[in-house]
Image (tube, rainbow, N blue to C red; front, side, top):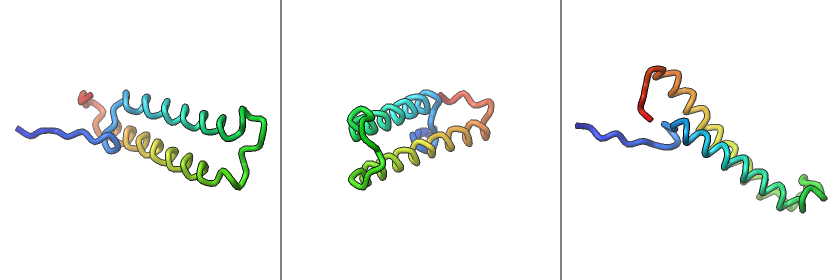
Length: 82
């Protein structure tokens, strides 16, 4: 019998998709709040370059999870592997 290893990035479930999307949104929101002092100053400043890279990286990772979820869902429409 073959054991199935689930890879979170390659085969996300709908629960993984929802969880990581909420965590991504919360992280982006809290980073923005902390760097702008509750929106009292502009976010687009030179000192925030590392935060930009962090946000872009997390957005790319979240987008990759979304793409893989929809690709796997379309390939296996009758799959009940969750």
